[in-house]
Amino acid sequence: MTPPDARKRLRLRRIRITGWTSLTALLVTIVSFLTWFHIVLPADRDATLDVFRDDRVVFTTGDDTLVLTPASGQSHQGILFFPGAKVDPYSYLYPFVDVVAEGATLVVMEPLFNMALFDARDLEALTSPYPEINQWTLVGHSLGGVRACMLAEDPQVSNLVLLASFCANDLSKAELTVLQVAGDRDSLIEESARADAEALLPPNSAELITLAGANHASFGTYGPQPGDGLATLSHEDMRDAITAIFREQILID
Image 1 (cartoon, rainbow, N blue to C red):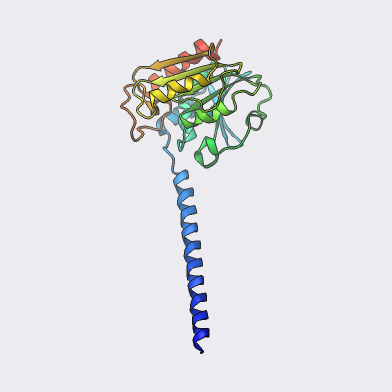
Image 2 (tube, rainbow, N blue to C red):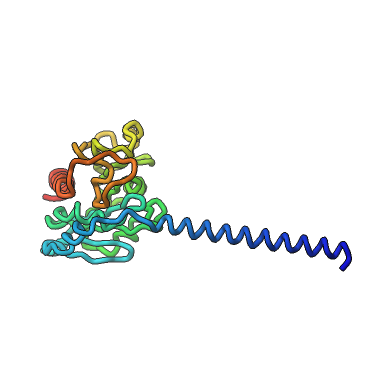
């Protein structure tokens, strides 16, 4: 083999090695990315079983959604829930079980990659399976609230409820009621950022409620979250607080 042939062969070998190395690194990155997004903070098993055993409500699943309906019959009031990032959607059933028992339908989306911000479904895609519902309240926890804000100007929406969350888009001219619910033990939401974002909300129809003893994770049943404050409210306490808020201000007559 001549020296030019040897150099050419060596060059091709280096190109192949570089190519395979790059492809392997890319595959490892993709697998790691997908694995990370599919590791979620799990829902409390006992709280979820309590919902399944509750004869006041009926649990079903839809197209990438979890659905709770009142056992007494159909509802004309709907709650569309956007979970927090990498939180098991089942975590949000227990806090709303009493609201559903009193006449609302709860639809919890199961978002793409467990990130509501990555889910491109519009409101029509999420609500069309429920034509009997003529009024929707969008509820979002943490980053799920950011996604809820993005869909809140749809004519079907009459209320927006942000749980430990705030908007990133301008809703100051929207015709809807906005309710922010925060916990005084929340260490994951910067109060200054939330306060600054109030300018994005309708000026005469937005209200803030702060729950004493609640932290960032209190709005679901997925347990402690790294960096969060220490909550003093139980799952039962949060269920009662959320039910009272919805009964008095949002849905329940």
